[in-house]
Length: 67
Image (cartoon, rainbow, N blue to C red; front, top):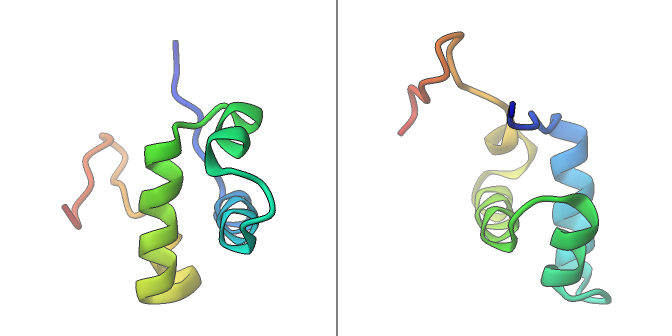
């Protein structure tokens, strides 16, 4: 089964909803079929570097050159 690749806009929408705090992150995660841990990582990256940090920087072979 292939993993879903989240677009930058999808990540931003999920992160902003999590930051608002009106809906628990766990509920957002279930609805969006992503782990709560991933949302917390995206949120941390967004807070540190904004939209630029949420861009997909993986190479074609799936390796993350940033990590």
